[in-house]
Length: 350
Image (tube, rainbow, N blue to C red; front, side, top):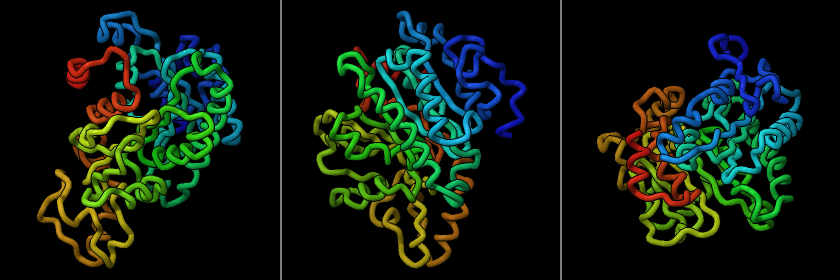
């Protein structure tokens, strides 16, 4: 599927599109999910109509698994293509790590582009063609390696630019992309020359930083919706927007995790074979039945079998993230200029 079934996706003709005749990235080397990401809406007309002002063409750079032989070569190609199209001249730059299949959620991508009138650049590269739940079982480290290499290439160039003449830099990842992307926010990036933040959604259970934050959450906050310290740097949200519940102002760096209590990708616990998981203790998430009970072995098998079915549910449940939640998260993290609550509702309705 990744290599062959793409006849209905036309090769882009615009010079700023990856895979075009002017591009450094051969069209035939980009996987199916990458091609769909490149050619998907919105266009300048749609963005201008929504904002009521002149919009820019959003920049999207995507390097396929077959575009170069090694992750390092693919990351270098992504950087050169990003420079070619002018990605570092935009106001918002996002280094996005896709899911295992190479997919980037339109609900996360399009909402950001509408919010900033197309004054955005998103760069990503493929590392697998398997579903995230399968890649986690086979080799979850692929996501981490790919994310770190790409981020390092982009970040190293970004930090050579004048602070007042470079875009704000963010991270993004869904599912296995979240697992890979979160390792980029290390001490080197945070303290030497800080990035501005990240939006991570559906973090899978092996995610190390997410797990550490969840374990060290404030007493009294549930595992499915933790509160971490004063919330100035890291906040969690679910079906209902809870990003302002801390009552504290944001700091300079803003990191948001979107997660649903009914998501087995996040809340599968190998230890549930012999111990009741914490997400079933005390207050339940709004999407988890109060009648659900824990049984040794049985609950473990139930949630394990839910993993490959995690997206086969309505939007806003399980591992199927709702665009409305991305809107709330991107607003909190990127703080778009001249944006108000009416704009938020209008974009959600749109």
